[in-house]
Amino acid sequence: MAQGRELKGRIKSIEGTRKITRSMEMVATSKLKRAQDRVVAARPYARALEAVIADLYSPELAERFPLLRQPEHGAQDDLPKSGSRAAVILLTSNQGLAGAFNSNLIKEARSLLARLTAGGVQTEIHVVGRKGTGFFRYVGTPVATSRVDIGDKPLAEHGSQLVDDLMTDFIDKKLDAVYVVYAKYNSPLSTPPVAERVLPVTPPVREGPVRDYLLFPNAEQILTVLLPLYVRNAVYRALVETVAGEQGARRTAMKAATDNAGDILNDLRRTYNRARQAQITQEIAEIVGGAEALSG
Image (cartoon, rainbow, N blue to C red; front, side):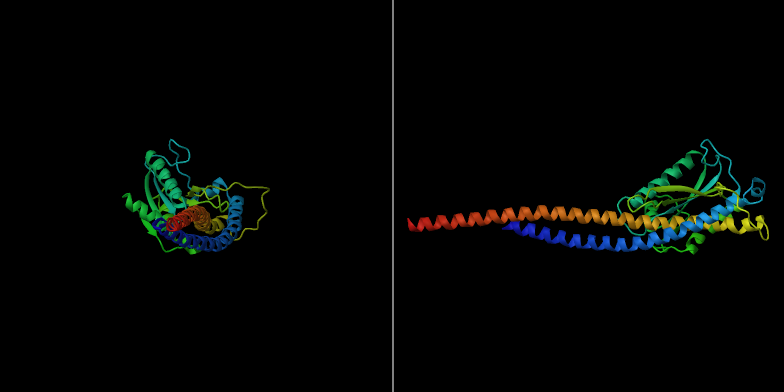
């Protein structure tokens, strides 16, 4: 029964694959809970920073802060003018098996780079994660910097490390804009890639009545400290949301793989049982035929 042995081998192989995908699904589920906690913890701080900056902001005060220096727009209102210089930070994961998660982020980054280049803007790309780094090296696109050591537990220091040098270049007018491409975490099933400009800082819109602050020493010195914190926190928040999105995408992909393996196993077992029943029927027929021949 060569076909039966072949089917049993395939069944055993797929059972082993299903155990692996189920284990990876469980690991991703565990990591997703911790990643969601980091996202939830990061958002209130970002909202508080935004609210304070919105209350302190004024056009007259903004003229004294380089991080608020708005670029001259080009043909497209959301892009700097031709001849400007822009940096793009792309956040990807170190591991695969997460469906189209990384490819969607890379596609979003390439789309942004193409739009900037078409508008006459000089670009440089900074990549986090092995997947993004490997892709751009494969296609021959120069990468200004790459990081593969951040992993799935990003810290606030990582956000500072990624953007501090770019902030300095922006202040020194070596850059006119800085963008970050990341996965915005809405839910485990919704992690769309987003391209967000972090420099220059877009003045937050004030919501509600103006708060009555007692400012010490003064608004200018407070903004001097808060604006860099705001930029670093934006990059850190992008990191934690991307990690949560990665784990959600991996859990979804591994669950789909486990379910598909189960469907294939059911089909193979039915095929194996039919083949085995056919062989048994044939053997019985041969025995009955032989007995009749002997008795005749």
